[in-house]
Amino acid sequence: MEKVIEYIVGVTMLIILFIVALISSDYDSAITVMFFLLIMLLTLRSINDTFSLSEMLLHLVSAAAMAALSGNSFCFILLCQVRREKYSSLRIFMPAVWLCMISLIKGSVFYTTLMYAMIITGISALICAAEKCFVKHFDTKDKLKRSISICALGELSEKKLNDELRIKNYLSDRNARLEERENISRSIHNSVGHSITAAIMTLDAADMLFDTSPDKARKKVCTANERMRDSLASIRRAVRVLDSEDKPIPISDICDSVEAICKSFAMDTKTNIRINFSKCSLERLIPSVHAEFFCSATSEVLSNGVKHGKADMFILSLASDSKHLQLTVTDNGESDFCSENSRLKIKNGFGLKKIISYCEKNGGKAEFSNSAGFKSVVTLPIIEEES
Image 1 (cartoon, helix red, strand yellow):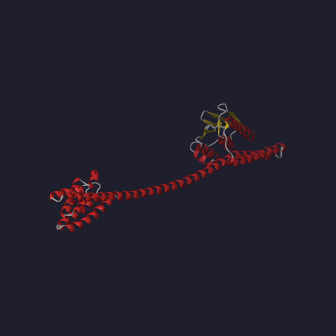
Image 2: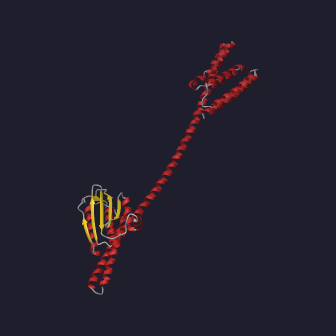
Image 3: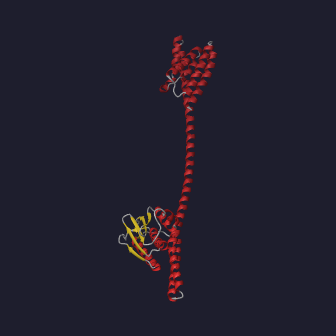
């Protein structure tokens, strides 16, 4: 913008003073040549980032020649457009200096020359001041436009960021709801599925005993009825998870719950379960949701051992160190589970897939193998919290 203003001011001055020069002088052709040469120099300066010393000297000589040929003192104002960035302020006095030099050569009256020199210096100062005012005005407008553009871009960016945050919060809430549903489905499958399976097996036994031993059959029916009630209570607990606030509980409570599950399962299925909690730090605290997971995982692997492997012997251990809690269950069942078909088996097995998914989401792992019996190892990191 600064170069554009300089070019406009320079060309305007040149046109006006060219007309003045033509009126004041008889050397029309020479002045015309100087005029076109100055026009070219001004144009060259306006489009170039740098202006060489030789071009500046040519500009100076052309402006001085045109002023001298015109015979009009005011044409020396052209010299205020000859500028050098390093000595920019000196161009105010350049027209008066050249006027005095030419006047001395011509032998003009000193006082008259001095008067014109002062007038020309004042006009040059006004032109320079006007240029600076125009440049400052347009620079301010440009800065204002840039500021407005930056603010508009900032608002647009902020709006976009807010939209992204809204989408992210929506997805986060949605994922939380989906995860909650998954936890509920896992809990219902693991606990209720086991209870219903046990109840069905008990009812089958009662049906076989109904004709020969009615009392034993009635006892089996009562047991199955109790199991179904337990299943209904488990469903209600799972639904209430949405409104509950999890609090950390000691590992000893998990041990008690796992032991109760094992005793109930052993009673229902006539299996033998050996339990070992000797390697647990019973006072360590873990989130209650992890405790619920270990209980449901215990029910799942015990049920799978009987259902798929026809196992009648289980060895269950719960161990902890400073960072992890690990559940290990080994049975004597017969299974075709192996490294070659493990992915397919786990993919088709809803319960095992849920166990693996929960462990991966919480920084743990679940491993299953079959060597002289099926073995399940479930490990979760301990995140100790204040109760």
